[in-house]
Image (cartoon, rainbow, N blue to C red; front, top):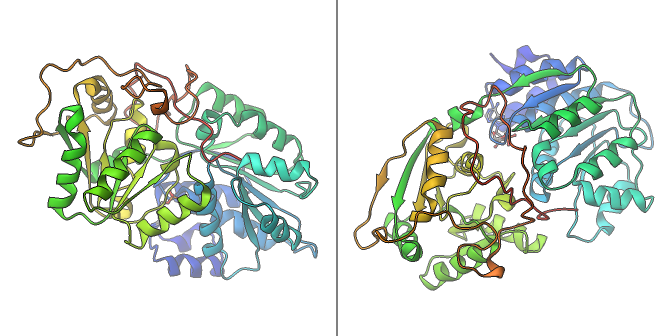
Length: 436
Ligand code: AMP
């Protein structure tokens, strides 16, 4: 199938060609025609599936087809859980609307609101926003949503995990009743279904099956190693492999900082990206990583969500996530858009049960290696470390965000096979990262 058969305008096809896309991804094939018809859509899709273009292209087409009002009220609103994802969606909207008379803007917290406000004053057709800053500006009377015709909730599951439900409801209540609604989510918990029931009108369901495809394209490997030898091992792997662009995941912000310091000491340039970093520091770290001036980017799960780093050759899990689905999100950062990639996990004894959960979810026995001099500790306990303690009984090590248990989130859809896994520890370490 080609993009030409989806009913998109010449201006959009030109922008798509400029991106170098030749074939629409499955989610794009399914979602674009339905959105063009004006239907509400409930889509099961996660980062890496091409979902952003899946909603942006038809949204832009619908907006461009209408008569432009002189004062340019906000006609489409895209809500995202994190600043990074908001910025990424905005980049997509800008690229795809290059040949259209459509203005877009992005707003999120953590930065001065003044430039955002002046952009809004000039008139914006498409606004991409995180819920906190949007409500903030709305409460100050600095923006109006009374002319919104299309609402997109992107990564709705993450927004709920991060405690944005009330904000979302408040925002929705300020929108006109007659509008098109698009909800994208990787998982479908009871809360997501309730949200969908509340505000979608006869939605069309579209599903993509990213997980297996993504996982299949990636070479996965586990190094069994003693906990206190992990830092030495990761430095050895990066140095000896001469890897120049490596994304490393840690479970805690503190762990990310500590690892960066050790890498720097070993002569490997590294930067951390997590919820305690200012927006400026995150942007700098990410652009340094993208332009190869920083070799290693150390991230926590929430901070990494939505990062678009094309053709990433190496992802390393310094620690396994306690939520198996996060493993899939993490390694989805490599082998994207058809490129091959390698995902390595350093696994200590206390992570054994996490590894089992992950293997169940991806339906694969991940090959294990042991490096001489970095052997696992045969006497270490296989009891999982307590979340919130970072395994070292140190409060400053606590995982990112709040640690309130969420019992029924993360339920997968039929599309996102396999679905057997339910993690032992359902504490969702989601939190305030990237909020507002
Ligand atoms: P997303 O799932 O929206 O985060 O997109 C993942 C990546 O796929 C981004 O780098 C997009 O630029 C890229 N992409 C989106 N659609 C296509 C397509 N049809 N063909 C190739 N790459 C695409």
